[in-house]
Length: 446
Image (cartoon, rainbow, N blue to C red; front, top):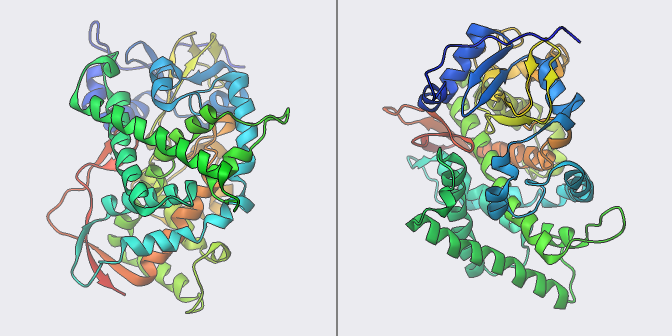
């Protein structure tokens, strides 16, 4: 290991450090720091903070020495547990490992393949009113479609009226999550507000909906094949299953984290396709190679390689998860030589990592060819981490890829999307990376 060194960094303000600069322009500030100060940058953002961009350091934090780098208390502490419960998101250490091993079979590729038919179903619902000249906010449309898909995958047998109420509650819960995790002051959940009161009602509605579904499962003689049923039958290594409370907590996570990132990857991909006619032509050529009557199910995935490359490049430029934060449990020295004190925060920003010109020349250029098999092999593994890595790798990654590839192919097979003039598309780094004012598209049948 290299001799420990102090990481360089910009001069901060007295008392508040770099927090004002970061909060004013999160993406730009981190990108400038990486460009000006190298692979590890010392900052003061609510305490000692280190921005890392070397793939060796990223691997060290997420894989090789992951036991020393836990999620921030903001995502595992009391406030987060009040929101997410005691599920996989908030679990730490051996508890997290035990829960992950128990849940892993639920998200195996052979299991999620059964949900592929929901993709064309929910995408068709989204596009039912798309006619020549219709203008839509593609981000909002896709959020609705992917939310419907996630809830249908979770609850096969919910009546339409009950599902509509649940969708409303989940959308409100998503708004409250943004408020809670985006608040710059502590105890945001203790401050009375209209949103907080509405969230409390939505929270009860979601938990009640899960409990009713569990009761139906136990009295219904016809077995179900949805995600809720899979959670009910999941087993820990000792053969025990989850309690209803534990199942409810895992559903809490899935109803928020299970659709938003997919919708945003699709929205950014749609935007990039609409502004790059050459890429659109190549994708249409790939789609035209499919038989006219071929359903876009799981069996089509292997034929949609360019479609997947487009999504991979869209997530390079506009990663839905734009920042991971870890906290050092003990003093450490990174492979590149920087000393990390115990208690320091580690920033791993996909926005910055994915724009490193050393590994992605001309990084602002949209080029799906960066994700051919040969191009992927030519780069270090930890230069591209849209779903994370190591023991915190997104457990639903394969499910997300399946949804995104099939949905994008379904849309582009039937429609041309053209960006409406007169709008500025600005990425907004909140809990996820979204287009600040949406993306307005004009629809034309293909």
